[in-house]
Length: 189
Image 1 (tube, rainbow, N blue to C red):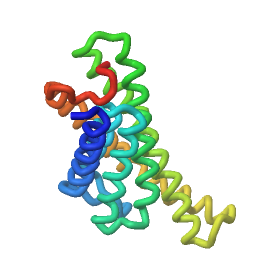
Image 2 (cartoon, rainbow, N blue to C red):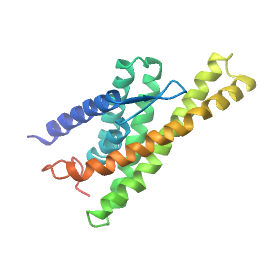
Image 3 (cartoon, rainbow, N blue to C red):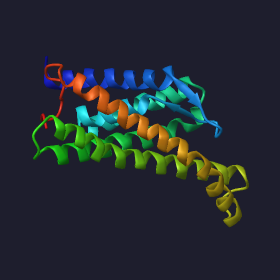
């Protein structure tokens, strides 16, 4: 199979898996969001495909999950936030594991790249939700921004839990997936 065709097919499959894993198990939160398994796939997109292609696959798959699940108002933000999450994970993973032997180094690489990537996700949703709350309470005045920031803090712990679950899923799935011949679309770290 031609390298570009393989990369496109892998990206499409990872986007579909990201969408499905986001939609299959949803645990509602009091902040009207939900904790899901999709962040594990978001991290795997960046790690397996590299930062750029992984960002596209993760962003598109996650955005489609929002659209199909009735969270269309979050879809544009999700596209950007999950793409940045996958980009961060892929970039850091490949930088960190390039000089280390495989095996345990990959597990360390998942932790060392997944945690900052999930921090990007948590911060991204915090900023987006603060902006939405500010707009809904009267625009971008000092008072409405303060109210938006205060209201958005409630979602931070839930997004952090979702991120931790994502890192754990990535840690569990990467050893299985790396046994697939030629799974890495980037240079094998």
